[in-house]
Image (cartoon, rainbow, N blue to C red; front, side):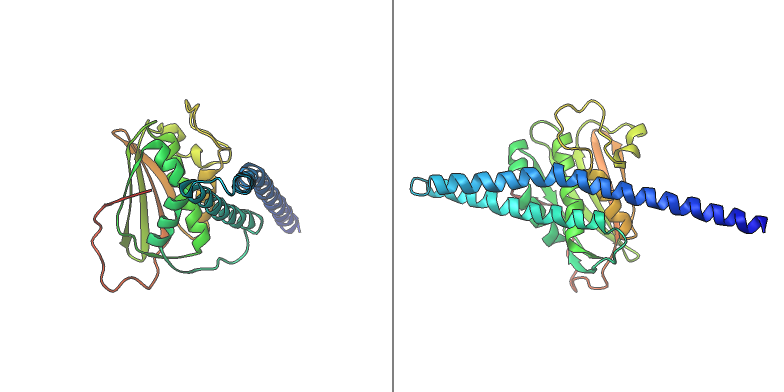
Length: 259
């Protein structure tokens, strides 16, 4: 009987711990909603207001830029809403399919084009494989890692390299960027909620991006980490590979990407 009571107490403690974890995820979702969705709603609203106010006076290039801003805001809102749904429904089954990581990355680059241009960054992207994953969530991983590379890299210029390999049914993806080396003591902590890199005054955000990446990658059964060497920070993560891959495997030759 004593052993049974002890086991019941252990189970109750475990249930309580899981409830606390669930509450933490829900709190995370609430913060993400405020930090990420609000600016996107405002950007869309202001772009619409300016477009309507200057309807007859807008130059064609300005109208095209405003339309691009509204499309980017809409894509970003869809991405954030997907992440919030994931945070609030962390026990739901993943909606997996064969995902072309090249197409995912192209959309991420379009979304981040203003930031890429502002930094003068040069993107070199190798041919990527297909992963067995939920596409909007993997898009969030690439978006956050690219944004992290842009904001924590050099103030001007610099080359960000994205590549991937297939190894025994696993996609191993890498994002390498120049910048101050992440200290060894921080290489685990940066993936925890609200942690910010030391000495980074210009970086914006709430310290949630890498936490989101870890959550998504681990939900897919993968792992994520970072190493640093000779002024290059190397973020790497794994995903299950799709059984479908292009019949003619192209070589992993880096190619520049225009933002």
